[in-house]
Image 1 (cartoon, one colour):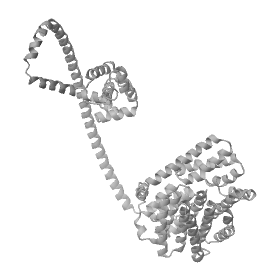
Image 2 (cartoon, helix red, strand yellow):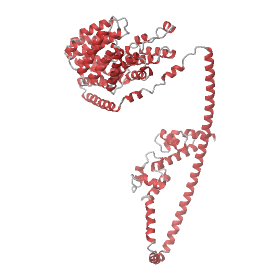
Image 3 (tube, helix red, strand yellow):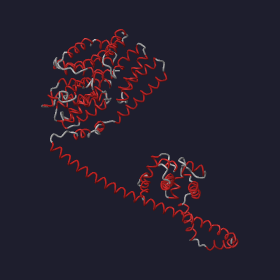
Image 4 (cartoon, one colour):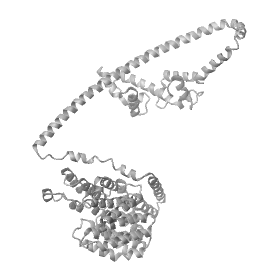
Length: 610
């Protein structure tokens, strides 16, 4: 549950860490006061959809720099919508921009975002890497408040990997910096101080040091009071910090058995603004008081939201959702379902370990590089400010459209010519195939007749052959015998051992159209001819006819489908595929196109035009 508390606290910390202090200039700022960084930060928590819509307009009008827009989007997706992956995507755009090397203030704010988001996405190695870089940069720039913020976030990463004492030292260093260098009326400094105290509280809770955690109560209350008196206070932030503080108290009171005080904290949490975090917060108290039905509803609502908007392959999902769900199911006596949840937890942990082994720093950069072209659409939609530019652009677009139309028309004519040529080639091949089949049939009939005649003559001359056999044998010189044997052995090596059976199989398949059965394969062929071996059938068939057995069946099915396409215009493509022995329409389309270079539908259409 430590990650539940930290992530709830951390989302507010991101609001002051997203963008530069640049503002719209001139008349745009005076006339359109909503198109400012301050206003978007003010509503990003309570009205995230409206904030994104305003950002789209800002981007279209180019009122802010791209990095400012990416930073604001990162904050909105994290704080308002709870989508860590989207937030990390836009933050990585800033990290990869050239300004990271020249703009120190922007770089420090970006590091704060990256450390927080890497931790929330369970990338501990990346979180510590960005933390070390950010701390060094903030210290060299003399930015004590930012240094304190990064120290606080890094503390939780250290706590997660078991360095508890070092984590507390990081938090104490951060709070000392804030007390020495932070202004009482500065929202950023006071917000960081509240954040640091709650972070230390969460670390103590993870170590079950409840009394020491409760000793921080007065300090947190004083810090919240100072925060409420700041000149600038974003909408909803103070309420969310107070809710997190009540969650800390609720956790301590519940674990210490002080259920009356825990009930008060639970009621105060439920009276505040509801979001996906609310149910997870009160579930610990509901479980302790055995109100399992209420706890189950809360945790299921949170689970549905998590599955829809967040990555479920991380410890946050395990600690926030599945662990509490398992406890609730056990309390309700639904042990079989609880066992299933426990298995899900084990599977997710295995997936996390596997992913952590496979992922590297370079992978992080490549995951989010796919959306680099998103700003092009907005840039193309910029309004032209003079009639001359509009006319020029219209003429250019018209010329481009005409060129595209000409190119498309030529392309279509080329495709039609190629398709006609393909259809003609297919028809010629099919005609040649039919002619070859007729010749083969005639040859087989002649061979059969010759064999019959030969058998009759052989029977009449058998006595004469027997009398001359000895003489023939003795007349063969010793030098001829090895050569003859060698030729015979060579012929036997070139022919497969089951050539006659394979020829019988081929004739049976073609004569009885066995290939029209979608399930007909090597196994069924061996059932028909048990003397064949299913393991060597394809190789033997390839040796006889120059193609593997599965490809042979596919060729027969395609030829049959081609005849149906030519002879029956009323049948649908799907029906033809089924009648030809193909299992699916997609398979038929793919194999037909691979063999003939044209789709079945296009072939039928071209045949109609001929």
